[in-house]
Length: 244
Image (cartoon, rainbow, N blue to C red):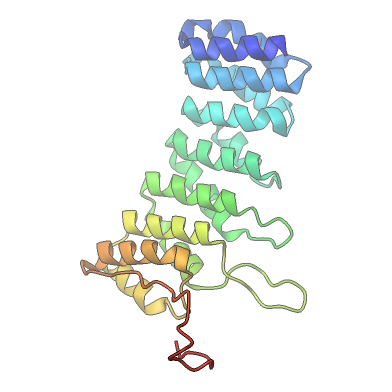
């Protein structure tokens, strides 16, 4: 506990020259100490920490790797791209999110194909939707247009594999909203027209503002989300189903 607190205090101090005192803690026998040291080094952003952090990332388990990946992203370590991408097969969602965001922050074009691949790999048993949300965040910052077709597909089509006896389902609403934000940032009028033409199913209420905002930006028109009706006035209406 004392070593964790000391490492975090050095990171909060903000003096990059203190990084050298933290490097030995990356090899500490306690994962929480090495994790705290990784976090502090990410805060200090001393370029000399890139190699020790990469070594710790390759040698330690997920608890340390998650913060080491974050720190390598903060340091924009292009030398870490290969190691970070190789770990994307993890089923630990917190680690995968850190890996994706770190790869995006490196600014290295080699990081983009692995990030796009995260949008393709959806397994029912290990869905990891927050990793796809992170992928859209990273691809938006990179202005990557190659992910546009997949983003439209995630917004408009059931992409999650079916459970036994069921059918495929739509991705989580927050992932679809992230895809819409991505399309609004990197798309054009043609993308907006394709998106509008492809939306066939009713859009959940939580998504409607993002759909209206994205279509409005891409097509230059005014779209307004329509609210659901939450109550009925039974004294003047039939108890039958109301047409949509």
